[in-house]
Length: 316
Image (tube, rainbow, N blue to C red; front, side, top):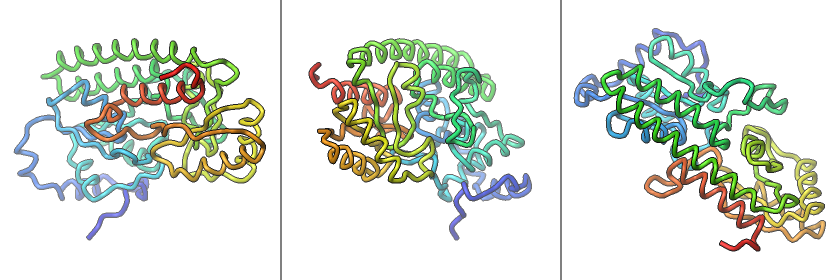
C-alpha cells in the first residue's frame, strides 16, 4: 500500500507515529553499513554534503534532477529514508513547504538542521508575494550559500565526531572554492551592458542573484511555483522587454516551457525580437555525472547562458 505524500502530512504527526514509521525500516539493512545515514532534501544540499563528507556517509537525496521543491511529493522510499536517518539536512526558509515543517518537527527525535537558516537575517530577502516570509533561494548568491555550506559541515561534525577533522578540512576547502566562484560570477556579469542587465525568468527565483551581482530580475510567477501567473503578469513583462530591448528571456529546467512562451509571444506582439535562452537551473541540479549535476556546475552554466544571451556580441 503506497504511503501518502510527505508534504500532505502536518505538524500533527506525532512522535509515536514517527516511531512506527521508523519500524518499517528493516534493522538488518542499517547494520550492514555503519556509516552515518544522511538525508538531504534538494540537490544543492546533497551536493554540499557530498563535497564535505564524500564516502564517509550514506547519503540519500530526496529531490533529484528536475524536481521542484515547492511541489515535491515524497515516495514511500523517501519516507523510509527519513525515518531511518541519523542526520537530516534541508534548506529551510519554507523552500520545502509542508515537508520542511514535518522535518523541523522530526528534530525532536532525529538531528535535523535547516542549513539555509545559517544566513544572517539581515542578509535575507523578505517578500510580500511570499506571505512576508524570506525568499529561500539563497544559493544564487554564492557568498550566502557558503554560509549554508559551513552549517552543513558543522552539522556533520556534531553528528559524527570521529570524522570531524575530515569534515572541517573539506568544508573549508569547498568554501574557498565558492569564494573564487563568487568572484568569477561578478566578473562575468559585469561584462553585460548595464541597460541589458535584465533577467526575465519563469519564476522569481533569482532575487539573491540580482542583488548580489547587480542584475534587474523579473519573474513571471512568484517566489513559489505554486502561485499562478495571470495575463497582467505576462503583459507587464512584455512591456519591460520591449522598452529595454531585452534580447532573451529564460525558462528553468524544473518548470514547463509554456510559462515563458506566453511572455515571448506578447513581447513579439509589441515588436520585440526576443529569444528564449538556454534553460537555467533554478530549484534543482542537473543530471548526476554531468557538470550541471553539481552546484558549482549549475552556477557556471547559468551565468554563461545569461551572459551569452544578453550580450551575444561578446562571443562564446
